[in-house]
Length: 166
Image (cartoon, rainbow, N blue to C red; front, side):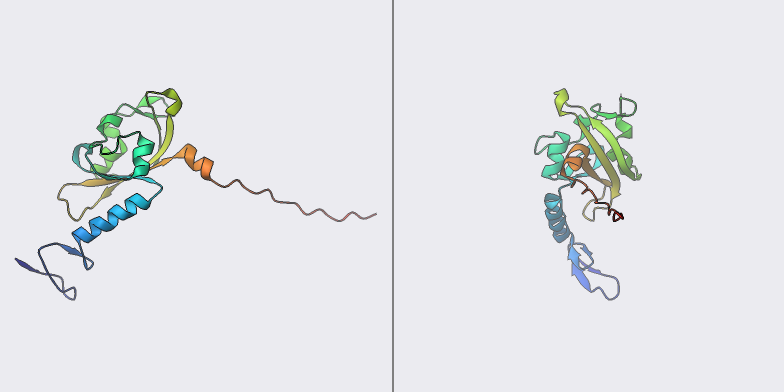
């Protein structure tokens, strides 16, 4: 089955082309970018199913490698201002799957060991995946404490002293 592409972009057969790249090439490129990022990144599909994730996200969210869903995080994410668990329908990735963009939301992740609690900044946005027919969301996670520990300390500025006149 042959499809005619938009004028000037040529003809393609079989796989969908986006800007001259096949969806398979785009998926490979996306996977390389996910793994290289120090920011935790999770590509989520319907019902919080994990499509792709990187090692940073697995570590920050306390997930097992190969986890199939973000659903177990429900009830473990708290609003730090109110110390109340976020309802499953209001979790950032659920809202992004409904078309909302959530930027820089601070949440506290509770884990079985209280010493391992983490203050996370989460951004979740709708994601158009060329190879998928269902909505997706891209979730980016930053561990606030680790970010502060890695930030360079400000260097003190020396003040110029006025010359002493005698």
